[in-house]
Length: 155
Image (cartoon, rainbow, N blue to C red):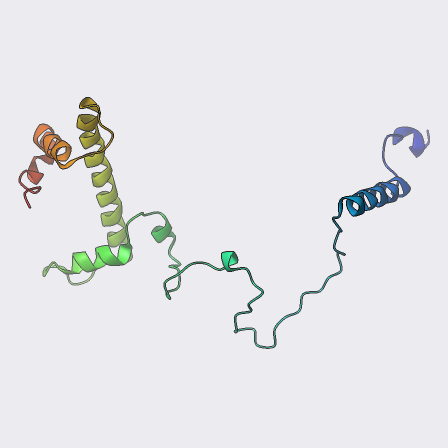
């Protein structure tokens, strides 16, 4: 049995070449031209200098600070540095390690989610779409685990 019989439906190199040429002529008719694949990219003499040819969208947006390398920072929605500073306001706390700050951040996120979920139930009952201060106050007064916040909304 010959290999031509087994692989009769396979494309040969000649058919691939014909197909590629047909696609190129079709692209030329439309006005599109394919760039050759052997283009070498010119590198600036000073690699540290920003080149104006680079698209701005490829650069990460930062406020002059490098992005945190911690995997934990990506897992929280609250800024860990701000939480650390708030924790340091306690005179009994001398040092807070990264794990403690992360745990406090996650606990605060869960607390905010719980409070907002409870508040939204009262918003939905009044057939509104926006959570208002009175909805939060009603949630605080109705849920036993939130009673420690009673009077916290009086500002």
